[in-house]
Image 1 (cartoon, helix red, strand yellow):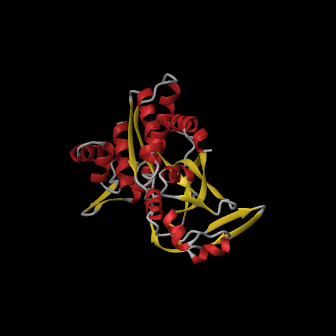
Image 2 (cartoon, one colour; image 1 turned 60 degrees about the horizontal axis):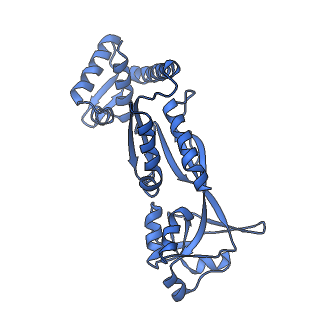
Image 3 (cartoon, rainbow, N blue to C red; image 1 turned 90 degrees about the vertical axis):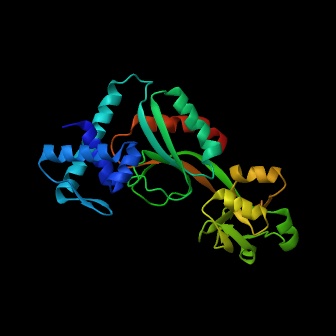
Length: 291
């Protein structure tokens, strides 16, 4: 039984079809289909039911997928054990937020690729929530407050958050000085989040309202700089706007919870060494600067 056939089957099962799996693997659809047929002939069982919308696992496919994924994981772990300690090879697929990724994370990823010439780094920069498991990513870099999930997370740093407004907004509308006044201002935010303010051990939670929402920290900063409202922003994003005179910090006597920077990966006992090395480089380069 060919190991490449096993890996291909797992990718097709997770991607939901031959075409998306072929794109992930960088292979022609004909090669992927041939591997699947060969595997099914070897097993004497149908693993996938082909449909016009993709491919669905048969009962045998559901059972075999778990075994195949475990076998591939064990082989990866065994290969890493006998490889020279500094050598990484193969693909590393990861997702990172576009608000931070190109400027703050891309140099780290480039350094990792330079250190390991046999490693193929494929990165998706996108602010949407990426399903690492179903979309076939080895790991992801996330900034914010992590929701409950079955992903394994490692914090690599934190980013201080403050409240900001544009100078023109402050002139036209004033600035809140205490949490209770926030409700009287238009907020620029991600969704329906709450803001928790703390001073001298007292925590006050406010549910802001506004007409501009976005899933990108840069989009929120731009809207705030345009005078649409006030926003809670990581200082790492806001500092360039402050330096340019487009934003000013407000309510500076009150603090907001810092947001975390995490490397997240699908669950499993085996931590791929390429993910561990990436985490170590991020902690080395990003961690101290983010605190």
